Image (cartoon, rainbow, N blue to C red; front, side):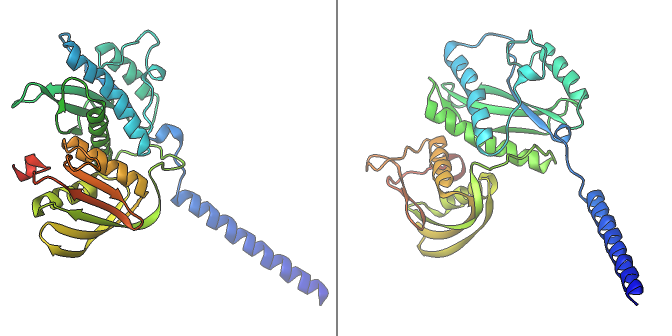
Length: 302
């Protein structure tokens, strides 16, 4: 009897081990790991110009790629240094024929795709003193341009606040376009901008209906970590309170809103001479427009 009992225990144990082995094997087939070579990569380069730019425009052209790389890193996209993907003698980080050829050789050795984020500026048609930043997303293997993004013009001479605001807006747009086109970059181990899902109370005072709609649309489509938004109450047309659901920290939301206002040339301060005030409160953020001016002129006129 004891011998039969031992035999049954061994048989059952063997069946359990076989089942676990097959189950784990099935999981490995269903969810294969992605190696570092299979992730897509991005490289930030300046557009090669046929003629030399003047000193004012050159300052923006030199500063914008650096600011864009920093902004991408903040939202979890780490650019590749071109020096590690190209020939060592290529010191100028521009989309020259030699650089393109070197990157094509590098891309041919990888499974994942390589994207060039080509940064350039162009004069604003209505005001030549304003320069519009542009980023062209170029697939090195195919030569296709899956996306071109831009932001509001930057005032010349160089304004660091405007450059940082433009770079942040461009980084958000690039990340969204890459996601729409199926590009997958290696995720950061810790997202510096986010964490657990949270609800942030967002109060908008002094913004008309059009301005509220534009602001909320940008926060929905471009701010990382967005989950949803709902109207809590609107006592009057220029005052509304929303519940903004996100995985981004309140500190990051504070920074992104400030940069968004700076991008739209709405300076922010606690002074009554400024256009907009931003208060970080315990429950959320309170955005108060001081002067009776239109913030989003392109969309809402004024």
